[in-house]
Amino acid sequence: MRVGVIGAGRIGALHAANLAELAEIDEVVITDRDRTRAAQLGNRIGAATTEDVVAAVDAGIDAAVVATPTPTHADLVLTLARAGLPVFCEKPVASDIASTIAVLKEVEAAGTALQVGFQRRFDAGYQALRDAVRAGRLGRLHGLHAVTADPAPPPASYIASSGGIFRDCSVHDFDAIRWVTGREIVEVYATGSNSGEPFFVDAGDVDTGVATLTVDDGTLATVYASRYNGAGYDVRLEVSGVAGTLVAGLDGHAPILSAEPGVVSRPEAVYQHFGDRFAGAYRAELGAFVDVVAGRIGSPCTGEEALEALLVADAAELSRAERRPVRVEEVRAAL
Image 1: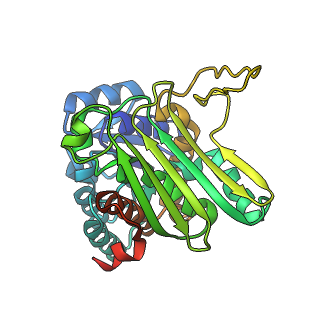
Image 2: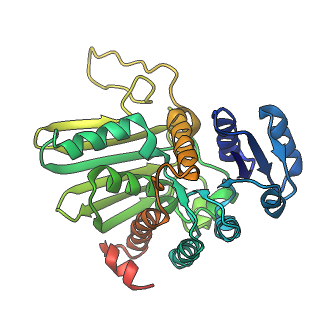
């Protein structure tokens, strides 16, 4: 199997290296506008390179991974789908909901598979949470708390095109909450604050955001996101039911300390990067994509599921802007 990787930046390099280690992959073909960067990555992992996406398709790749900046996703997915290729695309599929829907319609018409990169679905802790919830081991759920906190903010240029903290960061939590519980988020009440770099304000964004969610069965959830967590990369999901609470991400590498007297908590090898925190998950989701390409399974994270998470994120951004609760169906109906 020959798989093209479009984009040789941080996440593209990670995906390319993971693909190169899979037994079923005969060759990885890398494409990036920065040909020097593509060549360096190719040399490092033993992959081929091409000038552009068209050349990669012409070279006979069997599938492709899109790991480029968000504004380029839609056109690349369409180009690859029209060529009849299965596509793995980092979230989001497109920059806005209307464009996402248009892309999904074309992908469906082309009859190709699309898998969206919500890697938390492949993390062992999140999978254990889902199993516990689906098996009823926590009893009736009444609350969830999700955290996504970066050690430091990304560059100003990234923030300007990120779509906002809820679309960029918390969308992973929205997807995880839907996936773990098997239920829909129906209402969002969100707010945010800025006390860091001025480029967040310049982009109309916030460096810290909090959203309160109502799930369709009445369960409540809080989602916290921050660009400033100097202790390390902190991603967790806490699920509480009448029988107890279970947490994903609470391990010896989480950058969390106890304030209780006499309690010694010294996390070792604290996570500093998403690639460290989700190393196993990233490998597993690419392994699943190979299974999709081979026809052994359907997409484990479809474009339609990614759209649902994006609708929640848009509701959160609207809620923050207008300082009111927003029903997700209000966002859907406005299309």
